[in-house]
Length: 84
Image (tube, rainbow, N blue to C red; front, side, top):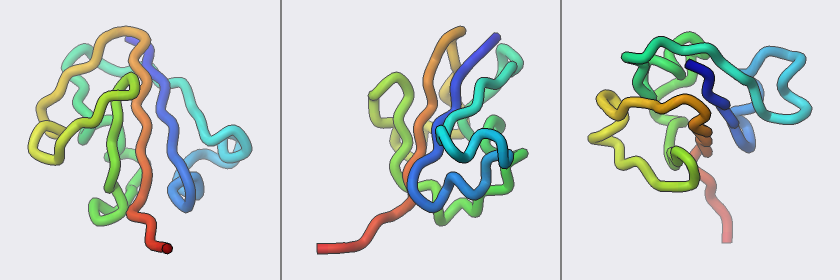
């Protein structure tokens, strides 16, 4: 199945070089793929995976290891952001 992964802010550094400009990469994933299994190959430190959305809907940390995908889903991830 095909999904889209979008990484924002400093997380774009974990994408392949050719995907960093647009901060997006299309992925072929297994039907059993979860958020955790999709981001594992990108070696993003867990403490940097802060805000996670699938199709614009927040996915709580407790659900990220088990939430399945459907074909065409968009996974978007932001790191913690400080400011004021």
